Amino acid sequence: MAREIDYGGMMHRAMQGLIADVLRGVAEEGLPGEHHFFITFDTRDEGVQMADWLRERYPEEMTIVIQHWFENLTVTHEAFTVTLNFGNAPEPLYIPFDSVRTFVDPSVEFGLRFETQESADDEDESGPDAAPADTPPGGAEVVSLDKWRK
Image 1 (cartoon, rainbow, N blue to C red):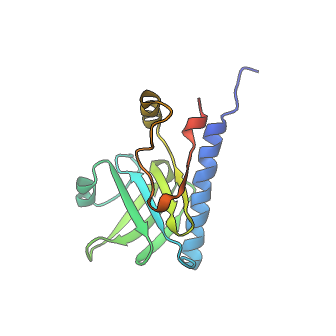
Image 2: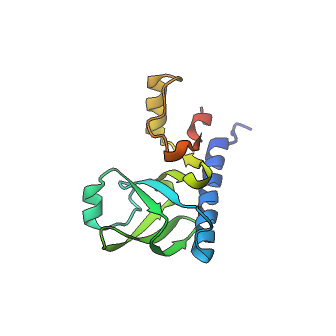
Image 3: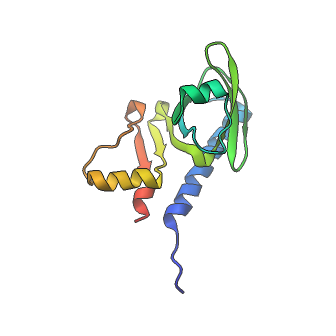
């Protein structure tokens, strides 16, 4: 057999499933305790749907916070939608899980970072001892999935 097991891809999909499960629970029951999320996503992803003025303001990447005010949170296998308040203007967002770059819950110091192939190449150029470019707030532990794909 010439095939290899794609452990990196399998872990990537499993972590996206974990985020989907967490968001589904929040959609059904609300945020428990002090939990809240910082979710960074690539606004250039072709599946992302957002207001033009937001895309102009965040042409590459945007971090949203799901904490005090959010509504219409729905989750599918491929994406989630949520309406957030931007300066007293409610705006719906459609965010495919493939566009998510980081997911952080600082209340429990949990974080995931999904690296693109491009950023993994940059890491190779900067050396193995280089510090990560994006450290989530609260010093959360970050799991870098693509570093295991070599």
